[in-house]
Length: 134
Image (cartoon, rainbow, N blue to C red; front, side, top):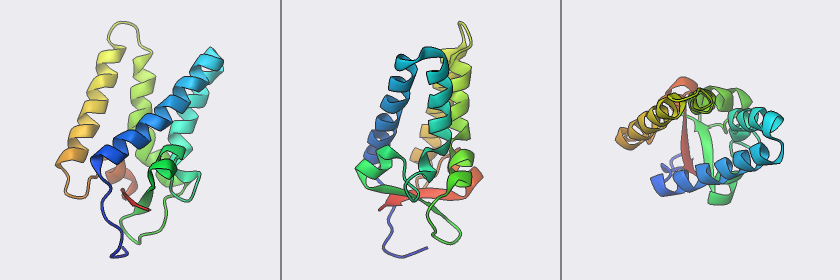
């Protein structure tokens, strides 16, 4: 891992994810049925689009990198690391308790990210990635 890459700040990561969620919400509102699926697909592949950056990470100048060799995240890494959050979007659609399950997943990921010295959440552990300043 290159020495000049430092752990991304929590605030920048939250802002980057907020930008990505706005994109997902726009897709859902434009075409409700296919927009939901398009939003989940975007979430899954987003960190592989721009050399390890989703649109939100690109704007916030963050990057997903491999903890093994420092290379930029690719589509495989993106799908693995975002599968946990995508599952939250899927369970959100369950009537009555879906939003509680989704909130639980997101809070769990946030707490893991907050408590990890490298800012890694469960999705990062699965993909062996972390988010750094670009």
